[in-house]
Length: 231
Picture 1 (cartoon, helix red, strand yellow):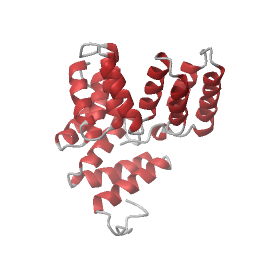
Picture 2 (cartoon, rainbow, N blue to C red):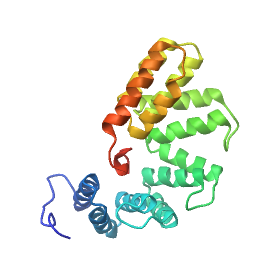
Picture 3 (tube, helix red, strand yellow):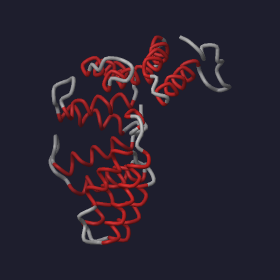
Picture 4 (cartoon, rainbow, N blue to C red):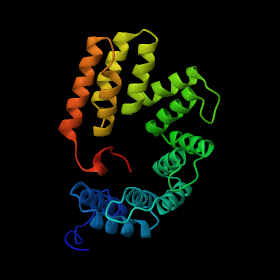
């Protein structure tokens, strides 16, 4: 590797931590090929987080030819090592049938495993499955509980869906509070979706939030890999 290879580890950081930080820094600058090199270096030591990040690069074509099948293989390997984000990412692939067969039951199991490791985004996905009756019988009470847990865990989609349920139940003031919190924790694609979902609402306060979401989407749009901050 080029510059930066002589950087020593900061106190308290492992070599893998440092390599991952260097890789993420390269991604932030749009230097995908260098990011892949750093992640590979960390992955050689068996670091599950680095293997997951290689999977992300392979899934999205960051610095390497996109290969969803290989992305899935990396996620599976990291998931076997206990990485919760790898479980989540592999669940997403099964959810959409990308690089692996579409399999709602496998996706649900992986989301549940990821949620058990504290992943709030996985709690939100479980809520969607319970709301729609996908892979499990529809259970709106369970969906509401999962959305609330995801919201309290800081997930923007969890906050949005929790607010959506509150609005449906007639708790507009509490819904507005959670919609505003979602605005503080999202990313460009989320803001665009939020704006589209709320724009037709008859309540002018909610339409105002849609306008704010659209403005945030325009203001913070950046490289694709920064749309959502996660491994």
